[in-house]
Length: 59
Image: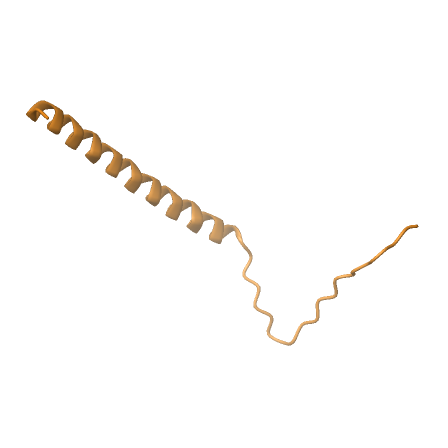
């Protein structure tokens, strides 16, 4: 490999590394924004949640 090729590879490697770092930051920001949109739900008392469950069989 020539020195020029090595420098080009180093430059591309640095660029890819920077892009990965930016993507990680974007993911963290997006995750924090999603967390802000959720409603905190911490019941103070025991809470019963009833979800109906139906099973049907047709013949």
